[in-house]
Image (cartoon, rainbow, N blue to C red):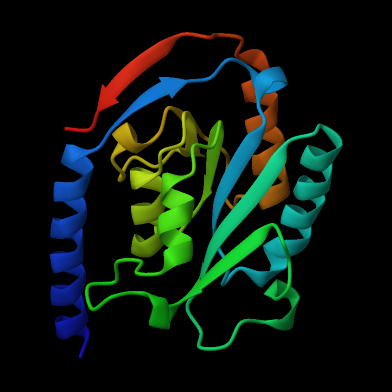
Length: 191
């Protein structure tokens, strides 16, 4: 069974690679003071992180920044704490196609939303979330440094001691974004 799943995942990665090569976006980050929309991609199997994300949502709301979280939950039923929350969209395993590629309207909407900043909280590198992050139309993408991943997906990578605590990670991301005051625009073609 595992061999069959690996073949399906390999085919999904092949499709993903072809789409990534064709994608282009402009990298632009004018500074956190000008940021109006932040997107977060999150592995929702880490239910203990939800309190930190809710707290972060409140902090961004106080700064008049619209925050949207897109998560992947591998189970069939969402935990009650993830339902009926306006800033959270959750994708379950049955919303992936045969090759583990997100196949929901919500995932397409999230990918095509032009967030000022996209923050990746996919520390276990789950393929469906990697797909969302890499193909996102976000102007600036932040992720955790990992020597095993393709760094071309991110515009800023954070190196934090393990185990990574989501609240600390988000605090560090905002700290470093506050240090950036550039309004430069760069066209990036993923190749």
